[in-house]
Image 1 (tube, rainbow, N blue to C red):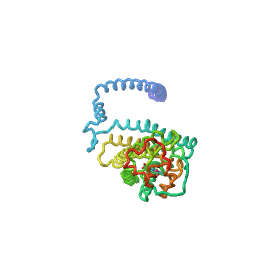
Image 2: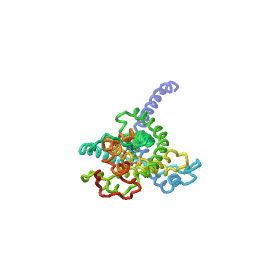
Image 3: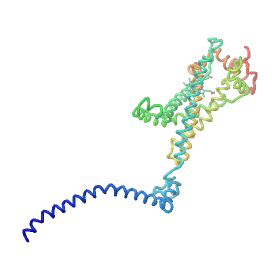
Image 4: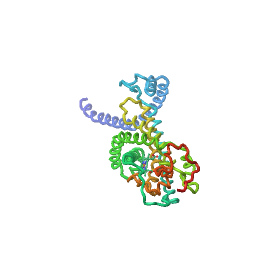
Length: 355
Ligand code: HEM
């Protein structure tokens, strides 16, 4: 009996081992299947649970309150602290990356093309009869102020455009690291130059108001587009109709640019996010518009018209330039006519009188 028990033991162990191996194999084969079934079942369960949650989950009310900025849904206190998700941010991003960039960019390209076409077709506006005699046109203070504003405006334009269009235009040129370095420089330059620019710009706009009051001969000038339509040079005082319109666009656009820029520069003064978003759109739109008209001004004030730049550089212009482009001012300086501001409507014929 003892011998029988001893001989059976290894056989039953082998059987147990075989059964274990077989079971393990079955289990191994079945596991993925059960996992799949469980996953499927789980999904179905989760979906039905989601649907139930939609209807009754108090968390959805919570997140709705967060989204709507209901007071008390944030642990932080202070202005707008209850607003965890501000819907206006998405609208602002869409306007900035959509119409603002598209319309603004197209405007700049259109102005550059118009200048090029004008220059190629009409060429430089040459002096008909230069005399070699000089007349003082711009005093030292006016010139210093003009170049101070002009140079700061150009730096602000380049840095501002880099921030708005840099990712699309400069990354292909400078690479990501190059652009990151340039953007890191542009931002503080734009911020720190803003206040000195505002001071000079506001002063220039204020002290040049009197000579930019529109008079009847300016409308005649505008009607003939400064002589582009018709044969004769239209009449003009110290500033012509086009320069006066440029000035007033600069004035009102400049107010929008400066006020919105001030909001953006000092977020710590307590503005709320929607004011900052609106300020950003107003600032970018007015900036792009002013850059566009300044491109036209820079062209006409340099290579577009012969003899004009020397007035803003050295202070004096040729008498021939004065007669041709600012005949009423020339007459006034020579004592032939009264000052422009005393004569409401000197002559609206649009033709230059022969002197
Ligand atoms: C390189 C850039 C610039 C050049 C070459 C330039 C050139 C000139 C010249 C030659 C004049 C005198 C026009 C005349 O005597 O009739 C002038 C006037 C003026 N410029 Fe510029 N300018 C430049 C940039 C700017 C900028 C960036 C601004 C402002 C954003 C500006 C604003 C003015 C204003 C307001 C006047 C007087 C026009 C008026 O009062 O109606 N300029 N500029």
